[in-house]
Amino acid sequence: MSNIKKIILDHSQLNLTINRLCFEIIENHISNIENSVLVGMQPRGINLAARIHQILEKNTRKKIKNGNLDTTFFRDDFRRREDILIPKKTSIDFTLESKNIILIDDVLYTGRSVRSALDALISFGRPKSVELLVLIDRRFSRELPIQPKYIGKSIDVIENEYVVVSWEDTEPTVTLLNEQI
Image 1: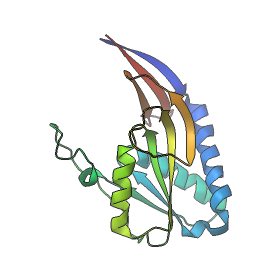
Image 2: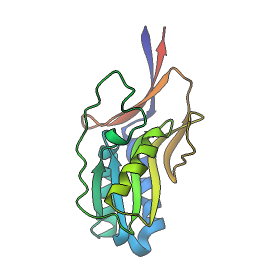
Image 3: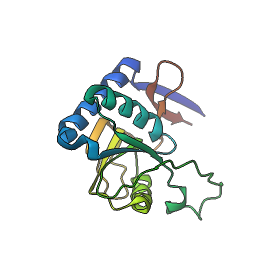
């Protein structure tokens, strides 16, 4: 079995995409950005959330709250999996009560991770609103009626293709892997 790789977003395209997403957030939240909170979904949404947080604070010159959310115990497959899920750290040290939440993940696939994140968020208070930001939207693969408000790039993929967001090194990329048998 071999993998065929196709770069979806190279380093510079990824930076442009993240900057565009930040300006969309600013456009929609500038009147009340202090009431907006970024929440990165563990494990892969936290890198994207950290970059967005840094850009937003630089461009708005305002302090914006940022947290990381682990959804392990809220997953609908938690007790059905053969492999053991090891929880990551949730770090939300503020209430989400009446806040505008921007939930951030790298790839939206079936929607099940986002559903579990919505359940987990309620533990920190009742938000005023929740918006979803994803770097990559894998269209046509949704199992739940979840739709992002902010989309870096939408792609159509077949069942044996996988999207990999690499944050390593100095040049992060987004790659489409196609498993060939």
